[in-house]
Image (cartoon, rainbow, N blue to C red):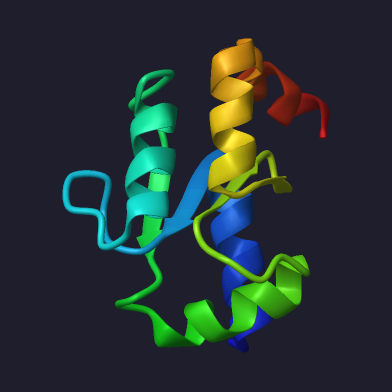
Length: 109
């Protein structure tokens, strides 16, 4: 399986996925820490990939997504954005709305 197929499979199998440095419990950078904390304040029902342990994904995902940095939040196979966007959405209430509605929207996509 090539790396892009691997990424697509991860996105297909997980409604909410956060590609980050480290884990939500032990983040390895401040941006990943803030993004994971923001997402965790809305739901515990998300999957994460530690890109520091998966070098192939760390190198390929920015090409796949056309988004150069980590973390990257994906919901229903759609890139939401990185740390700044996640925090903006948290403060505006959009992140909680997105999380609440994402499982309903999965069946429509």
